Length: 299
Image (tube, rainbow, N blue to C red):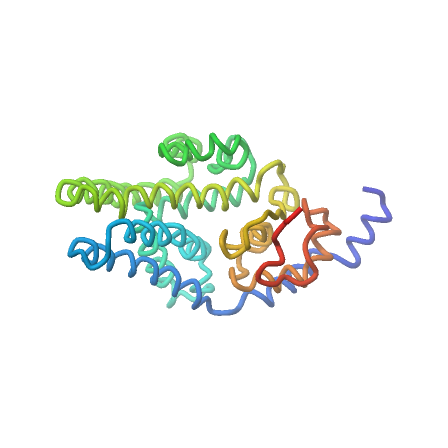
């Protein structure tokens, strides 16, 4: 970049100005995310007696459970960043409460996802230290296959990579008993209710994991590199943005994780000139106004 452009960025689009704008969108209480997280897991629990007692057919329960699984990760993701407590120690319990409960549908421990996700943010697109690297940079077919067979993240590898990080290993070890509990629970239920367990929990969790991996990892980071303004991109396709949790906007989360999910569209409208100046991948394609369906690519 030539000196003139560097000066333009430093004067008009400084990080301090960018951060100030971003901070103004990082204050709202995220009741929507709490409602989605606790709502989907409540619906999922209610499905079991409704299906077992033939109040609704199993196929309908499967479709509802799969929808719940696809809505399970995002509320936990906000909890992982402390976006419910907003730094208030008295509200810290809310992060863990929502984070743990919403992931029951996916049968994945909150501590495990939180600690690996923090490393993903710290080392985005680093082939050695980013736990999400293979999910973001392989062919889509491989990403889907790895999500289905449970090998999307090699947890043992990253336990070795970060073995000197006591906070990482502590959180990792706290997740092990819950992971075993999920596995044991599924084994017991599959004996008592084989079809119900397969179609209300096991298969929806697999589909939900694929959905999460594709839209949270693969699309936002595909063909990107390392660096604050280079590791996440704006993208679009034919699906309305609310069907993929507006992950077209995920780059703003990597830049400013404190911005609540439902505040991201307005934040991006305000920060679009900064993103273009900093050459965020795809930034020039961001609409000036982000409406419900404005991120659809129909070409």
